[in-house]
Length: 235
Image 1 (cartoon, rainbow, N blue to C red):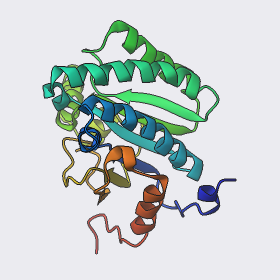
Image 2: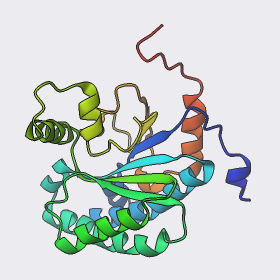
Image 3: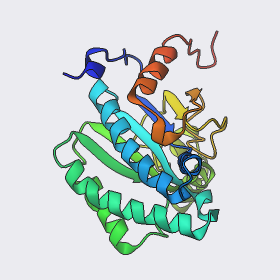
Image 4: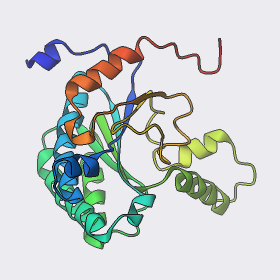
């Protein structure tokens, strides 16, 4: 057993951790490298952090990989992110073959190639019975998610829409609401991430740029979580 698991944090009351993986471009710039190199290093760190969360017993993990607004970035950077996404989704077929991780992709897949969409669907299908759920938000926007859920309900003939209806029809409806949302990179905002689901999430903002974010920092967030009192609107 690794030292990190010997000293694993208490995860009681934590069913879902969501992460805004921010700071890849700035990490590269600090090292005088093109921004796209930061995304490559960030992808490597993603594997490490997700594996750690699974090892300590977190059953639901959501990561913000690419937002609907990220298309506005320089074309070279977007092209590199898309290349990494294709490469990583393909690699997942091997990396997660023998791990107890259920994969799902949330967001609109329409802009992606038929091959990438097929790979996403394949991974969701072959991992569907596994315990630990990893949701990867790609071409995702929290506002669009709510609008799409409402439009779906209207198309089904719903005339009176409840909160429960929307919860059941958002992209991430298969996951419980996040208990913890972590944003790396030093910014203090949600950036259109899990807007419907985050109403009672505990928010943690780390100055660490994503490629440098460590398993120990995840454990520290969990320890801090237990010091907070979650009232859910009560007293």
